[in-house]
Length: 230
Image (cartoon, rainbow, N blue to C red; front, top):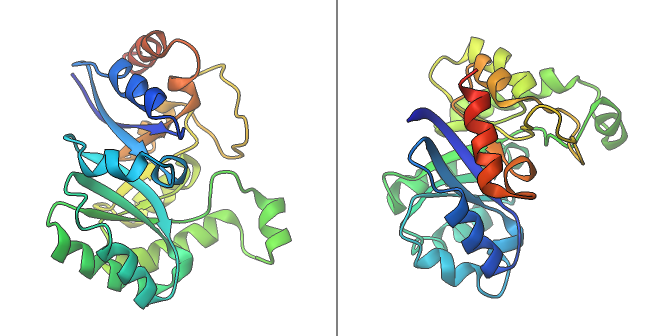
C-alpha cells in the first residue's frame, strides 16, 4: 500500500452518487478517506448517512462563528462517532479555535481539528479585493501561528504554502486541497499542484475531487497510483 493520506472530496447531494464514489475509490493500494463537505452535509439524507457511516471520514464544515455558537455547533455533532477530521476557519480567531479544539477532545479523543487558512480558490487579486494587504504566504503563516497556539492538530492550506508551513512547524498535520493529476483542468482553483509535488512539500495528506470523481473513477484511481509510483 502507498501509505499516504488521500482524502476524496464527495461533493454531491446525491446519496446514490456518494455511495458510488465510496465504492469505486475503495482499493487496498491507497489510504483513501472520504471527505464530506457542506453540499452533502446540508442535503436531505446527508446528516443521517454520516451518523451511521462505519468508516473514518473527514467532515469539512469550515466552522466560523463566535466561540459560543461554534461550541454549540460542535456539540450538535457529537453523535458522528466516526468523524476523524473536522475543519474550522482560522478567520474565527484564536479563542474560537481554542474552544473548538477543547470541545473536540471531550467529544471524541480521536477527532482532529484542522484550521482552514486561505481558500485555494483565492489568489493575490481576490485577496486585495477583500481588503487584505499581505501576500497569501504571509497570511497563511499568520493563521498557522493561531492554529498552532490553539492546540489544533493541523492546518489546511494549498500545497504552495505547505512548504513554508512545514519548515516552521515540523509536527503539524498539513492537508492540501487544490490537487490535480497532471494535465487535468484547474477549474475554480487558483493555487493547484500535482499529488507528487504536494508530497514533496511534506504535506500529511491531499484532498482530491474532480481529478478522481469526474469520469471513470476506477480508471482515475489507477492514474493516481501510477502517478504516485513515479
